Length: 524
Image 1 (cartoon, one colour):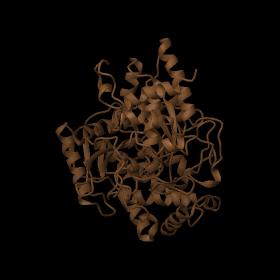
Image 2 (cartoon, helix red, strand yellow):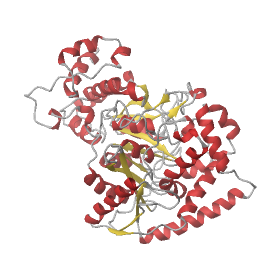
Image 3 (cartoon, one colour):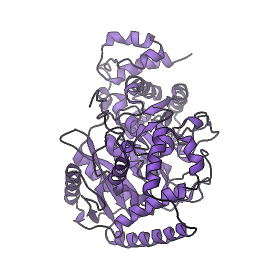
Image 4 (cartoon, helix red, strand yellow):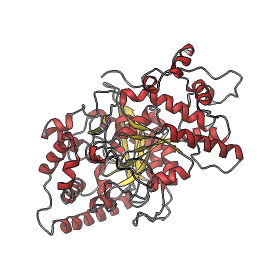
């Protein structure tokens, strides 16, 4: 018997969104293409139901760990959770274009199997039955790893990436693939294959990139937890723009491996890219990081080393990071976050890590110089906007001019890393903006060379962590009074101090009280 229609009706009772109960049968009877644009319609859960948060909070609004607890205690079934999120996607995604492939049938089949496991009394994983989404440059068996470009639209891979494999092993259920810019090469999410993703707080502003689709899906309740990656802020900048949380883990902590576009990676990607989790709450980011961590044979640089114990110590505050301008509203949020940390027992100091601007420049030269090796193959894959952005970046940051340029850069990187390690031994954490300006208007980064340069300038606080392999967590910390846009801050620490970064981020999260998921704004 196909139980999807029955459980779909049950899920409607749990959604809790505004709408007429009388409209529900019509919604269910519509073809899927029509239902996608229909408003969510629900009935309240019957009053006789046991009093829990589930009686007043729609399923799709609940954090990942809370969903897992309700599933484990049989207050809600896995299929009800999946149906609630599928309905949320149908109601919300058409205006945002965050999820570019909804895994309806696969998710329903996995939910039924997950419910059978609950019924049998078998041990459950920490995220059993929780829906998650996956950026389209992360391999999923039987799905195309498109990287957002037309030539890879049908690049189906046979196996999961290690991070997907581990999410499934923890019981989580994949529900969709999320959008990204062409080949992850912009701080804004607009794909030549999948189109533009809109920021739910203000559709005229960028949602960030390159994990922008993931951030939007989480911020609006289409997903409970997500997977992205970060070569130059791509887990953290979208989290900042959309009011959610994420962490760029320490180098080697989470395995990074994939088949597309090539299994063997450029040196810059080997040393500076990481896979990592995104969620609405730091507790969910922490839980996902724990289950994603550890050595994997497909990533020879991944490690099993246990993280050091977190401790509350000195925090350097960079409200106005060197290397460019900072919006006063952003700087004010950083200072308020510092006050929250001080009240929680952290020692606050106003110092800047050594060679800060040099680290930012080294990141840019390493990335652009190393990508020069594959530029003739890369450019034909890209759409016009991505080619324009990469072209401007390549002109501003010239490639390696001599056979020794890469070795010279690695010598410089080694010196910067040593200077930072000594600094972080005395001052274990650094608090800074995630982006030094509010999210830019859609198209700003490719409208002119000045716009491209400004985009690089505003993301500069996150780049030293990529160059040096450091953990860096983003947490929503406030909102801009004039625009209502969320503002996030970064907690960056010594390599291996991921938990310390998350501990401090959790303190800030409690004082900021940014409420997500949100309903998408209809206009700027």
